[in-house]
Image (cartoon, rainbow, N blue to C red; front, side, top):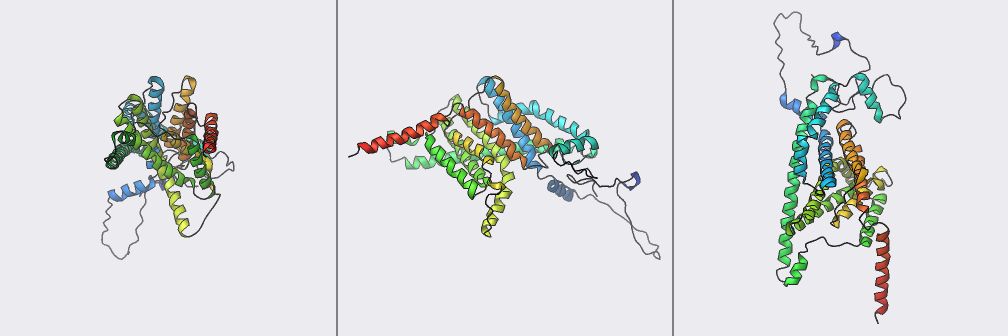
Length: 405
């Protein structure tokens, strides 16, 4: 006994008022005059299981809404004050201001969804398909995928649950990075016990190891070449997430050794970017599992849509920038609002269309990452200075070889 299934088109023929609801028919022996007892019970566990199976994609869309809003608040405070606050502080601020307003607005939006509004917004994404259809196939594509006002409580309930899930992943990531930091510090200490004081100080640098632009560009070019030829960009995304984990661990070590504001700002920034990437990872993992299965059966599909270089290039460039320990510069003027618009637009899309079109969330976060790469490039040496340093290094190596007898 249930209503219209979520994200399923309504019936082509509208039922009358007398045909709605639940109807039971019993076929009995007319010669038997005994009474019949019918007992209807509610299967609570089964209902919760079906509710999870129908809305399991919510745990990839609505947490991204929370993380995007929190990251937007962090950038707003950073561009105004110069301090990049932690994810916990930003989440606390958003829980008092923006997140309740967003959930309340989405709840009223779901209550106001009539057939015409739902059809108009549903066709907004499929505007290219102009063939008239007798049924409104896009009327249940929004929010929780149903127009039944009886289920209005699903949106705030899902929002509260996803806030808790985001907090749990945040603290789990903190525990993981701190544990890895302790393990790395212990391993480094074991290898440096027999060294001198100067060598031990070099073994525990208080900053990120400098990486030449030549090395970074060669690494990026090799990875992009592999994406365009053999591996899918989902595998490269998984590698980028692992690299970002160790970047956060290194940032935590530097911030613990040198207790200064800029080091903590970079650690908070790297940690928030890691959380943003982790919530996009569940969208890419199924495709990665299919690719591994195809390798097992020797079925290769080169140059498919999963080998799009532009889908992974901003993530690779951003992760490469963060491995150098350089903080994102502050954006002044009207351009600082572009970061807020991109993050807020990603959050709203994740709430309205994210459950039915979860694959688009990767591309939206990809746009945000591309903008952050552009912001990083204003103070980085990836551009003309990077190419200059590459040729300078080559010429210096040639001169040194020429002087050897």
